[in-house]
Image (cartoon, rainbow, N blue to C red; front, side, top):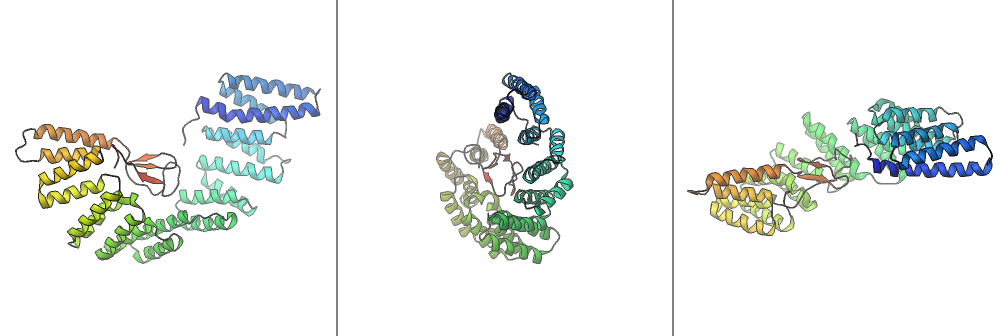
Length: 392
């Protein structure tokens, strides 16, 4: 559930309502300038506006709700109020407002469709997915493309990927907009499910579907590498991992360790070093630097590894890198400050762990591990590694 709207934010949310009410009253004033009802509405409107300007938002909402209940012409005002209630987390109030609208016999077809869409969103926010699904399914039959988009969201939440694919394709047909990236992700989810139940044949079929929709799909490549490793085909897996970083360099943190392990199993140490040196030139993060530091230590010793890492840190400062350098220094034979350096290394590690490693480029959601679908905004493939001093 999103955070409550701030007082200042609420002011700006209600301001359009105030403007709408002002227009309504002006129009009515023209038609029935001497009417007692208009006078009452105008008085109520200014009372609500006064509450709004004095930051008494709850009283203002109640007043504007009264205005909405006076006349059947105020459908847009009621829709806006219900939407505001939902955004504030007051879902029960939003449902009541929108249900009252839907039950009105005087609504036009367009108005009723809009009210039902808003009511369906209320049900989704309340977790009543079955009721929302039924409502949106009816609206799809009535020709409402927005209902299709909501159904796709519901099926994602329910992890019913077959239905999500079906309705996403229908949405493409209706709107003419591509949803290839999302549909490819749905096929990858099905591949994950197939692997979990021990069905690599079905997993490969779903991966092929993902590639057909989104050629070069990074997630499909990673799954292909997993299947190849399970089948004992390390060479194919290594090529798939190399394709991943060629396709999208930002996935280095996700595939670096399995790629290096695969190359090690093949006895291709030089190929691994070449890959790492290439990544260091192209990727701004510290992960490939730390991996190459470990290779240098194994081959040439701690002193050479520490010298290489210190040189790299001058070019790309990193808390994680600093922690690794302190650890190397602490492990040098006979270092008199070994205990103090060990403590500093632990502090550097804790400092690095206190920051998000990944962040969504759409909503800013931060995480310590990678998510194919952002837990915050539900967008696919929008999460990226954080770079810089406290990042990768």
